[in-house]
Structure formats: structure tokens, C-alpha cells
Image 1 (cartoon, rainbow, N blue to C red):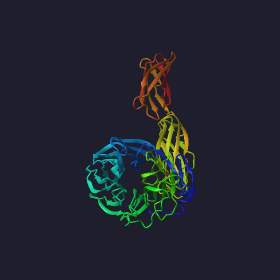
Image 2: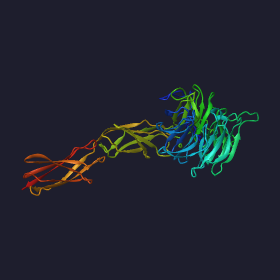
Image 3: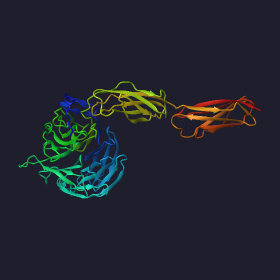
Image 4: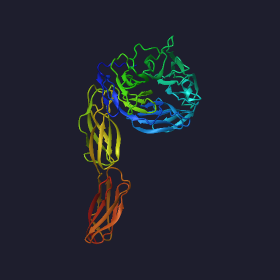
Length: 578
């Protein structure tokens, strides 16, 4: 595990503050300085079974097992990293486990009789396989290029906690699901780790007074156990009461949320106790979840607690680092009462912690999106936003420029800002833009509507920088100009007529149809309309006319404009002879 010694970096302070908008409080105890919960989403589920984080596409998946009836449908809710629900995947059977392929392209979901595969860009079902029936809820993990899943079966729900459960595998290349030969009693829990490791833990149940934790090598075709441990002593005390498992990013250590012992820290090689463990959870808190940040610097510990006792601690992963943790106490109808079992996951870069909380009854759930405590340096936009072209026009490129300044050392990776445009058609995300070494950035856009467009640029923070206050500018977007150029002869005649050629040009967004131009002729007898002309695909057109009298004849060609383009006109005078 990577060491995380940071003297003074997360200065401990006494905080007791109501966090804006979420009813979330920082416990009145030493707490590291960090950003609070960025967002809290109320989940559309009544029973929680799994949480999966897709860092490649910045998506969060939450599964609702919905196992109250054989005929119930399951639900997988899909969220952005900002907490916005973008879709809900409905399954035809209860869904009780989720896992992502190594490249994040495929989401695996365990149903009652099937393992289903979903595309993580379209959320469409791309395949599946019938497997042995599960009546109690599966656990899924992807390791060594294969999916592993548990298959518990019981004739009634009352038997699920102690039923016999099989460990099966799913081989995507052959679309088969062979049994591994490993099985035991209870709702066995799986967790994947670095180096093609697979961990399996046994919850405390009537058939297992001394539950086990095991480590397997999943690199080959056969699952090989490399370490195993039961925890009870000779007097039967100290048995494992498993709620969650997490493997450090380097694969060297395992953290276990044990409802009886708190947080255990073990060596992955033989599952022996690490030389230094983590401090006990606050009095009254029972361990329910655990997760390492993707960079190995931080550990999140979830718990079930009442009142102001913390339900979530975010602290250095190195147990030798005594920096005080950031402590969250979830209280009430706005954020739940405790962290759900197996309810913690990080983004791969450690920039976000996702926590599922639940109420005491276990029938309501919330998704919290929390910035880690490493966010410590201030960041600010130093100048007002500018833009060019000076006059923005609909359908043409526009550059919005600004400058970002930050405290502390230079970031390891370039900072990025996010931008939106708000116009009469709503708010539109413009993606992210990399900040240059001198702090400047340029957001490129092509506004599509005439009127005011407000550009908002945000810096959301990263592992070492706090979010900056947004900066905005309002740009008046005008209609794109058009022009008509005429080429006319100096003289024409009543017998041979007059031919005028021209070119019509429209900037901005392409016209939906070819422009139709109005043509008039003004001579000594007055002004009259001639036949309209349609502009060719290359923008050219021709006006042919037989004049009605001698003398000067002025030909005027015009286009009335549309919602996105200005009108234009041009004239040419020809002397008409007999």
C-alpha cells in the first residue's frame, strides 16, 4: 500500500457545522479540513444490493434487489459523478449483484436465473447466460478476466442466511458458467483485488460459528486458494462478523468491516494481522462498509450509528498516519441514518467517494458524493471572462477565455475546467478544457440561438485543490450575416435582354434549404417584381430579364433573412438600349 505521511497537510480542527443543503453534519470531534458532501441523491429503490463505479465513463450504478416476491422486477439506477440520475435499467427478475469488466465497457448484473451484460455507453442489454437459480441474492466480482458470482438457493427467505452457497464463474469468451468447486454456508461475499486476486468472505450465520475469509489466485483457469483464515480463538471468541471487504490498490493489504471488531487490517499474503491497525470506530458505531481510494492514500469506513455519532470516517490509509479523520454523522430524512453494508466505493482517481446511506428501517436509500480530504489548496478565477469574435453570431465558433490561479505546488496533471452555456433552450454542458501552465484556458463553443447566452466556467476541485467559485459572462448572440454580390453588364438591349449573375453567401449555421431570392426591376415606368431565383448549391444564381423600356434599369436582389441569419440586398444598374 502506498504510504501517505503528510505532516500538517490535513490539519485537524474542531468542526461542528451544518453542511449546506443536505442536513449533513460534521461530528463535533477533531476532523480533517475537507470539502463536504457535494451532492446527495435520493435513490429510487426500497432495497439495496450493490454499488459499482465506472470511472472510465464517470457513472455510478446502484442495484435494487427487490426480492420480496418471485415476480418482482429489479432496478439498476445510473448516476453521473455529480449525482444526476440519467437512466434506470429495469430487469425482468430481481437483481442482486453488480460488477464491471476491467476496461469498464461491460456491466454484469446478477439476476435470479441469469447473468446479464449491459453496454456501459448505451446501457443496452448486450447478452446474458442462464445460470443456476439464486433465491437469496448474488455477490459478483470480476477478476483475472473472468466474472465470479455466488449462487445461494433456499426454499424460503428465512433459510437464506445459512443456506448452502456455490461459487461459480462466467467465462465471457465461451459464454459458459462452470462451477469452481468452492462452496459454503451463508450469503458469501466476493471482492476483486489487484494481481488477479479474488477474496471471498463468509458472514456469521447459524451454520458457521467461526466464519472464514479466503484469498484466491484467479489468473488461471482454475481458482486456487492462496490464503485462508478463521478468526475465533480457542474459546470461540473473536469470530468474524463480516459486512464488507476492501483490497488496497497495490493488493498488499485487506481491510475488513467487522461488525464485532470494527475495521481489521490484514496482510493479503497470509491474512495475518497487519503490524499496525486502525483506531477503533467511535463508541456506538458498528462497522458496515470499507473502501480504499484508488490512489491508496485514503480509507473510508462506514458504520451504523445513532444521533451525532459518526457514520462515516475518511482518513489516511496508512495506519501510521495519525491525522484526524473527517467524520460525517448522517441524521434524518435528508441523508439517511447510517452507511449501508457494502455501501462505499471510490472513483479510480480518488476524487470522489460514493456512499449509500439508509434509514433505520432499511427501506429508503441515499447516494452521497463526497470530495476526499486531500482537497486543500485554494483555487480562483483571476480575471473576467472574455470572448471572441467580439460580436458572437449563431452557428459560428466562439472562444471564451479566462484565467485560473491556484495556491500550493504545481499539480501533477494539468487542471481542467468545466463549462456550460445557458440560453433560451436551457443549459448545455460544453465538456472540460485543460488549463495551460500559465493558468489560461479557452472554451470553444458554437452558440445555436440568437439572444443572450450565459457561459459559466467551473473548477470542481481535485485531489489537492478546492473547488473555485464559478465565473460567468453573458454574450449577446446575433444573427449571422449574409451577403449578395452581383455582376451585371454596363448595357443591355430590348432585343437581347439583360443577364445578371451573382453569389449569395450565408455565414453561421447552414440554411435548411437553398435560399430563394426576390428580384425587382426599377425603370422609368416604375418598379415591378420579377421571377424569384433559387440559389444553387455553390451559392451562385442568374437573373435573366427582357427590359420593357429604354434607359436605366436598376435590378435589386434581396433575401429576407430567417431566425438565425440577417437579411441582405444588392443592386445593379444597367443602361438599356433599343
